[in-house]
Image (cartoon, rainbow, N blue to C red):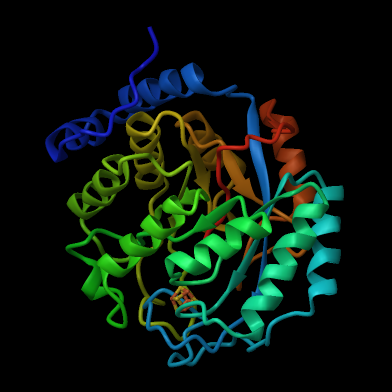
Length: 330
Ligand code: SF4
C-alpha cells in the first residue's frame, strides 16, 4: 500500500522523522521516493535571471538586494527575444522547464509586466513548461500569468515563520503565504521551499517543513537550497552548510510531501558528486542546470558536468512533462 499523502502533520511527527538516525532516515525517504517517482529520473530545469539586482528588499542572503555592496551587476529587464533564445537553448540542452526570475519586491501593473506576459507566451509556444519568480503577486496578476500559459510560480518561504524577521524585515511571512494562495487560486502550480544555513535552528527547519506539508495542497515543487554565501551580504561569513544537514532536510521533505518534486537547488556547486548522490538517494529528483553555469547570480554546475554525473550515477533527465508539477527557485 502506498504511503498516504497527508496534510495534517504535526510538528512532533515531523520532528520524529527528522531526528531519525541518518541511515534509517535515508532508507525511509528512498522507499517513499520509489513509491511515487521513478528514482532513476531527475527533472532538469533551467533558470534565467531576466532582471538582475537593484531589489528594494533586504533578504540577508541575497546579493541582488540594492542595499548590500556586492559584485553583482544590475541588469534591466532583458529583451523578450533574448529570453526566447535562452529558452530555445535550454530546450536543446534537455530542459523541460524554463524559469524566469526578476529581482522585484512585487509585480507592478506596468509595461514590464506586459513584457513578462509576452515572455511567458513565447516560452510556452516552444513547448517548455514556464515558471516565473517575480516577487509578490495580486490575485489578478496571478490570473493574467495563468492565462498567458504560466505553469508554475516560485515563492519560497525561505525559513520558518518564527525566524523570518531575523532574515528579512521588508516583508512578512504572511505576505509570502498570501502570494502562494493567489497562485493556487489562479490554477498555477506552486513551487515553494526554503534555504538552510541562514543561522536557523533545527526546529526552524522542521517548522518550515510543517508549513509546507500542511498546506491544503502540497507545493508541486519544493526547492531545498543551501545558503550560497555571497560576499557583501550580512550572511557572507555564515558556516558552510553541512552535507548531512542538507540530506536530512531533503529526506524529511521527501517523506512528508511524497508526491512533490524535491529540488536540490542552490549550493550544488560546493558539493562533490558523492555528496549530490546522497541527496538523490534521500529523495531529491530535480535540479537546475544550464550552459551559463550560474543560478541567478551564484555559480552552479554546467549542463555537461551534470550529464557526466548522471551517467556515473545511472540517472537520466526526466523527459516527460509532468503537467501538475512545478519548477523554480528565487
Ligand atoms: S531574494 Fe528576491 S526579493 Fe529578496 S532581495 Fe533577492 S531578489 Fe529581492
